[in-house]
Length: 114
Length: 111
Image: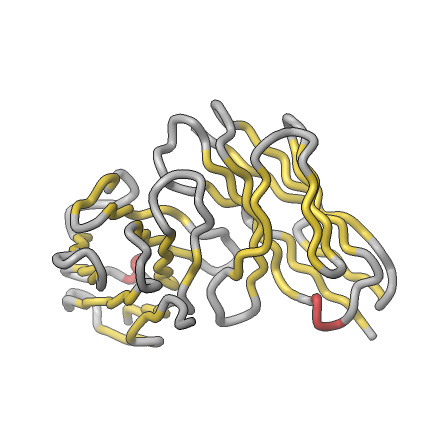
């Protein structure tokens, strides 16, 4: 079956601009996660959705970052006033439910802020 | 706070030369330990979940084991296509549904 998909695969933006990153999870998965991965590091948790609601947003670095999942399927990660330090690969994952279930990752969006 | 340390950072093997990767963890109430494989430019690919000490899982040339303090990923007779970064992650009792990852071990298998 289809896996997790993310668009765009690459995004280059100028400092101060607004960006949106999209994630389409595996069909039937109620839990959706966003992680951020810098070069040579493991993924770092940003936010977790159970259905339409953000169950845990403790990993969002500041209020420039926001994410939504209005219909409990596709999610959008939004970054305002981008900074060069936001450059990273943004990974989306989904699982059947929250808790100790396998999380399946998408290919990621590489964000470069110039 | 959950912590994961992987060693070595990088490992070079000859084809057929078996070895092990280590994942040491500190967590309050382990609910799951996960191994992933990540190829350059791609997202992590799920390999195994281990839930309790003593548990073992196998897939082709890979075998994952778990103790109360660490997990090992044993690679038997590796092939060049096993070259990748291997990531370990834990789900702790106080961490909700968020995984805490180690920095990974970059494995290179030479033909």
